Amino acid sequence: MPTPNPLLSKVNWIESGDIRPYVFVRPENQIAHPGTRHKLDWFSHTPIYKDPLDISELNFADRIYSIEERAFGPSNMAMPRWVFYDCAVMPGFVAGFAARPSALKKEVRDVLDLKKFPASDSPVFKSTEPRAKSLLAKSLDEMDWVPLSLFIIIPTMHKGEWVAHNLCSVNSLLAKEHQFYGLGFLSKAFGLWYANVEQCSGMTQWGSPALKLHTHFGHLEVIGSYAPVHSHSKTITYRAQVNTRCWEQFFTREDDLAFLENYGPSELQIDPKNEQSMIDIQKKLELGEGPFYLNAMEIAAKNLDESLTIYKPKGY
Image (cartoon, rainbow, N blue to C red; front, side, top):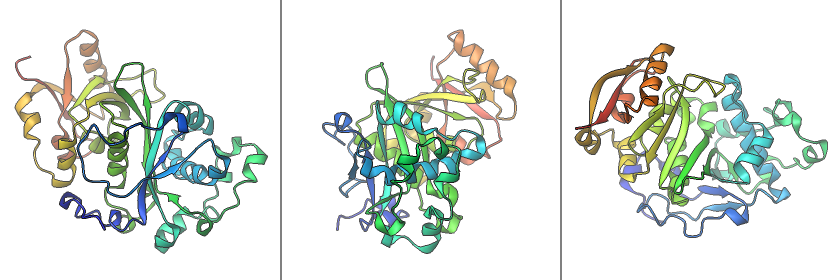
């Protein structure tokens, strides 16, 4: 058995091989030389490959839908099936972690049981044709692997840049004592590492717990602090040069000395409770007064509704 990286000492679920990373990508989009850009020894088990264009994998896809719809449905941001197919599967790359059903404890199995949480009851699934629904016949124990998380990244016209489109995991559906430590973070980390992503952009909402996660993949630049084009205008649009050295601080909680050396606090702040503060920073960005950055360790230490300091490159 491979020796796990000591940084992952809390992530004992990753050791046995009963939970492995998966890639859900059509053959034409497979990564030619996966995991060669970023030197990392975190993912020692061979990933599971699933072809989304193979209808025999519909059960795997539908369990992804079930987790995603239940995670984002309450905020009215669940992903329609056609968006997953048209905007993720066709142009992009889907990754995450999946488990052997026999390795899951009862509390997790209950959450993943579609008899208790049938996807066919959700608005997202009701758009599926009856013929496709009839293919969803497999129980949990009839599947070889069951998805536990989902991370979607889509390449852009800007060479080397990918957009992080969606990230969720079964953790959002489980009581804390039954969660898989670091599952969401490691799902994104695996996808970025495997696909050799150089620059990652993305969107999340101010005050969202996701901000505590996304700021640890590279020094996070705010390229948009307000997004009225989005269905949720209180959205931050960010980008980061992927830097695996920043990933370690997610587990160690140590200060990012490289960030503190290169960036300093400004007099500007974003208040998640104050929409005008987002608009004010957005106007400054549009006037070319950036670049602006967020400090991952400050965000980790604060409550979700506290104001955040805007940082700028030193000497800028």
